[in-house]
Image (tube, rainbow, N blue to C red; front, side):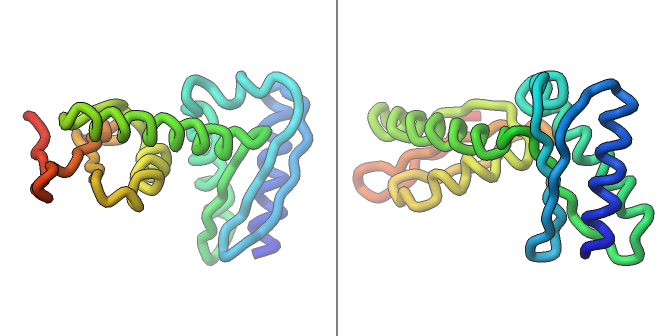
Length: 160
């Protein structure tokens, strides 16, 4: 595990140097995963719109690290706590849209989202027994639908 951490940090530092961005790179291992945290200025360049650049960097680092290891590890890359801020924002949005679905009695569809963001939304609403969530569509950018329960205990089926 420590080998994976050291390789991930080394590769991330090298990658940042090559693209001309100076950042502080820290990391730790937990539950079989490697977590790399990048701190510094110009975070937007590395995060990209809705975290797409960050997700691409994470995929790249995962491939590079696991190519060097016998046993694969999952590398989770974060920049200035972006993933936590994003999850908090998605949770608030999901709760707000869940309330709208309950108030109107109609299913609410929104997105598209990547798998990580969809998971955050599903988790945010899973305890609310008057709602259920489903992913709609194909590929990496599926949408989420929030479906309210009917008053009689029957579910409202989504349109489409």
